[in-house]
Length: 465
Image 1 (cartoon, rainbow, N blue to C red):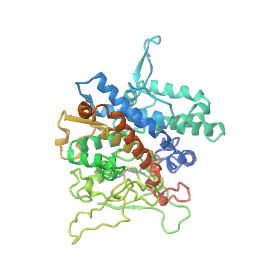
Image 2 (image 1 turned 180 degrees about the horizontal axis):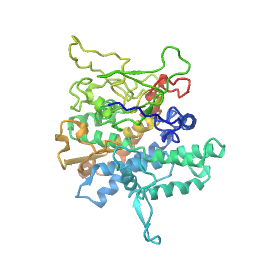
Image 3 (image 1 turned 30 degrees about the horizontal axis):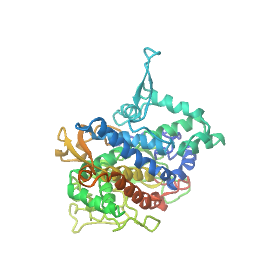
């Protein structure tokens, strides 16, 4: 069904830059230009050691607190992602292994103040059905208060992109409300949470795949892990339905004045139309993928050695369609695969509207998953049998992100526990070697995630959705 709705020039998503929905807005373009270098130049990579250290210590802390019990795997992964945001996006020096808690005031009894895990606050506030988070809600109020209080801090006491925005505000390039809105959006940008969770879940369910990833990582190679993450981003596109896009016809081109959407019924888009893109449906369509319900990292390709991560390296997590031909459709006599047709795989969007945080989200997913896989073993219980469902979209909540609709319980143990019984303490050595490998091979990781033809947010290139 198609319904025509006129979109305003400055839409609800214009004040923040990370998403692609506000592309018809001068505000969106201005803010995006301020934030772009942090992501495209990989400025977040300076926090690599802090993130790896925090992931290891946090999981070890949970093991010490609950040595025989099981933990909610997604809740753990989501907490690690939120706290990694603190270390990278906000540039916080450190987060305690027990988790980041912030004050929560009882709005009925204003004298009563308690504390709550930041990740739980964000998770609760995001628990809305395919709609934008309600930043004015009671659930999000503690987080909003905590971030608002940080506006009073001078730039030199801040880090990450928060410092960049503070400096821009001091120069008059953005308002305090725009600065706050952007920080809020960066903190709730939780695409790495489902990406990391579903990758960990499927890999640990396949011990041969896990073994291959560990063997490669020991040599500083991340080929199989990159393929697994890309397959996760196909099956469980972090944002199952892309944020509303606004089409604007070109005022410079005389070749056309609208764009035709082709399907069962051709729709001629007009200036201001809204388009919703069901990414998770396209990513799991049998018309576009062979055996789409099977978790199969081998459908994607990767360099044999991911140590070459500069501009010459293959872009593993971009919108390439993989090395499989498309299934034969209807009366076609042969399979079709045009390498220029990338629309069937777009976990972070396409064109000038591609998610600005894509390099960071991919880097963080790599870092969290690789750190856990190379330091911990786990037995995972599928509490409600979600993996028995045929399609990936049957396993997710009706939610902004592809969060699981039921818990998975994990019994975790340190990977080196058995070795220590025979060989003495080796965990410190394993962790040190792993950190060195990650630091060496993921340096400038964001460089090979970029596709220069899509990097331009200039308004002169508006003939796209």
